[in-house]
Image (cartoon, rainbow, N blue to C red; front, side, top):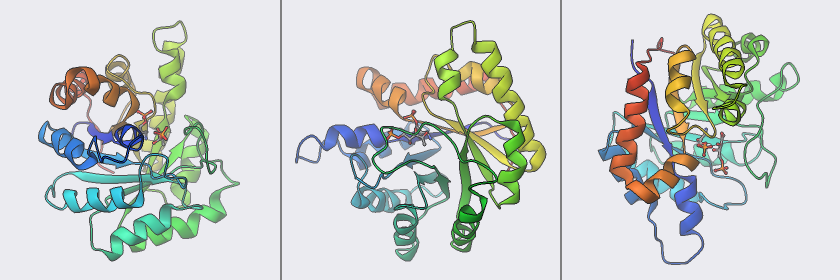
Length: 258
Ligand SMILES: CC(=O)[C@@H](O)[C@H](O)COP(=O)(O)O
Ligand SMILES: NCC(=O)COP(=O)(O)O
């Protein structure tokens, strides 16, 4: 049994960097500080419009992660748009990529706000999942917390699902929190029962993280960007990462490998 991994999403560092032509803040510097502080991995979501993460960032971070063989690189995006080209480029360069997270975002979408739909998406996902597996890359599917969809995600070939946690985050601290936690716990258990690993992400924060990982079973990885980078602006990367790791450790989560 292992603890839940923390993968730091660097999209928002790139968002700030892209407002000038000075190259600061540096993504590789941010990644290094997060990894030195104990983060288990780095996540990026290179959108087709390159509003934050650019193709060059993906390659530079892959090069950096070569020096951190015990950490993971997770690339998110829509495999029907630019993601497969981005990942294929990393593979061709023999740079590490441990996981792809397929997200059904439209081009130019404000932010991710829903998961894949089954059975409708199965036929177009299958060859893309097979391609990622041929590259030796684990595939996670971004999914709404719907227990009945998990068996279909497994059947199409996914290794993991990433539960889209915005509805939980929005309910945290309200009368709906327990209902949402129970819903996510059912979805996670259904995924585990189907033989999938379970990741989670979107709007997770130092406030809502402990309750989630303690009450939703089997969370292998959380990917966190927006709130974490906002915290880092105030606390610095080292203190921020250590506090997110404390939130996870406090919940003492354990998961089945998958
Ligand atoms: C897939 C997902 O959950 C997102 O959180 C995404 O990575 C965030 O993208 P933006 O940073 O562009 O909002
Ligand atoms: N997969 C979710 C992610 O990488 C980060 O989402 P957010 O914390 O920026 O909402």
